[in-house]
Amino acid sequence: MYVPSPMITRPATAPSRPASTWTGWGQWLALITMTLDHLTRYVLPNDWQLDWAGSSLGRIAFPLFAAMVAWHGLFNTRNPLRYARRILVIGLIAQLPYMMMPRASDAFILNVCFTLSLGLSWGAMLNALLEHHRRRDVGALWLVLATLASLLAWQWLGDWVEYGHEGLLLIPLFMLAMHRLHHTGPAMPQRLAAVACAIPALVATGLLNSRPLAKSFAVATSLAVLGLAAGAHRLTPAVPFAMPRWLWLAWYPGHFALMALWVWGLALWE
Image 1 (spheres, rainbow, N blue to C red):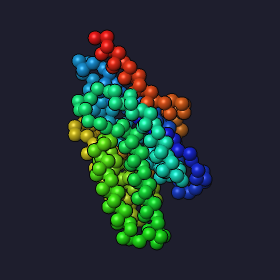
Image 2 (cartoon, helix red, strand yellow):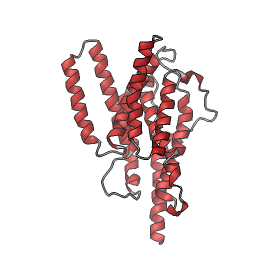
Image 3 (cartoon, helix red, strand yellow):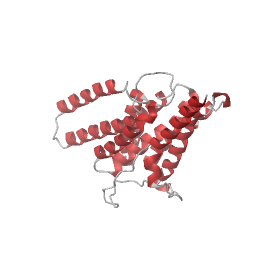
Image 4 (cartoon, rainbow, N blue to C red):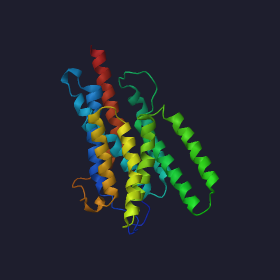
């Protein structure tokens, strides 16, 4: 899956913006684990018995991508909706090769870029509504009505995207947790409130998977990212080999296209 890096428009000296050096490591880890998951699911023979890799290391990818999208949308761009549109474009390009992958079900599902784009749009909208409410530009009634309307949209859209309702929830919950963890004060009640805000994101991550092994890897990934938001981002060194932009842009649709050619080529050969 592809997550474009946003255009960073906030001043580099802004005190409310945490260091994002960890995302350089996150890019490599997310692409490697995603590719491992897809290879074991779609390409490698079943008699190799490598499904354990997709059910363990492969479960790191989606929470990590969702966390990077939430982080950039919250801290690194003034226009999260433009960022969401860029992810959506990649999803549109990748949809055809994604649909060519063999699946147990024939149901039409939109690839994970749609999940990420819609989740970011939802989180950005709720964040903007809350900000307007704090400034008293939006009344409580409008806030409640808009939230209810977004929940109805979430209920409908969750049946059409990869990772379903839990996947759509993850980015808004990450944004809430990251904001509270990063801006929490030293007082114990504030710290406890921040921890309480992190729990829903961990629960949603756990609900993405049914197997205990998969749950543990996914939840551990989310827990690590929330730890970065709580302050560990300061300790992360820069990645020694930054991922080339062309690779980051092309990998999600490109690797699906290559796998589709491989799978269909083998089917024709047989």
